[in-house]
Amino acid sequence: MAPLCAEATARLAARVALDKNAEDLLILDLRGLSTVADFFVVTSARSTTQANTIVEAVRMAIKGAGTRPRHQEGSAESGWLLLDYVDVIVHVFVGVTRHFYALERLWGDAPLLTVERGAAAGD
Image (cartoon, rainbow, N blue to C red):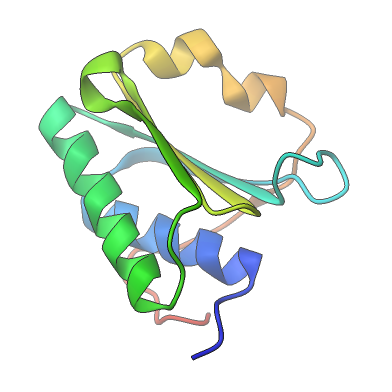
């Protein structure tokens, strides 16, 4: 099985997070704007339990597609979890931590990709 391209990985992570009731989800398209990654998936959880659930579901879905994260850091208790898939970085925030880091403002010139809950893989 060939690994997913970066955009497909970002969309899959977003759909899975939405299926776990993630809030205020955005996919920032950083291609041409950053060498850090091509896409940031940024979302919020209402609780530490939900944040852990979102991260585990994303890990399992992307692993099922043939890719493992290069790195994971943070904890739900710290308010920020991060999954690094090289070209895609998934950020899951709890509470006011998202406002503190303000990734949407920092990368405000990045185009947004749309994703719909439950869309078929590969869309």
